Amino acid sequence: MLYQGDQISIFYNSNSWSYTKLGEITNKTESELKNILGNSNATLVLSIN
Image (cartoon, rainbow, N blue to C red):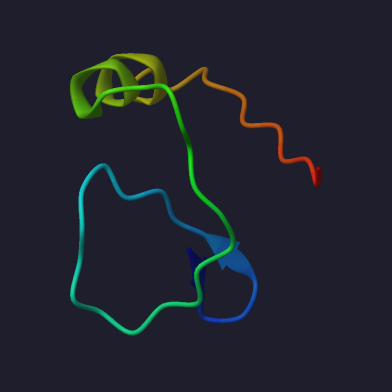
């Protein structure tokens, strides 16, 4: 989700806030995402298919 025009937020579950959806992560469960992204050394790569 795009937050305040220049920051990206990742939600592990649905939300009711008014963010701009940029895409979605597939083939990972909520717990898998928390495990992967919960580390302060995680790197996120965005791509357009």
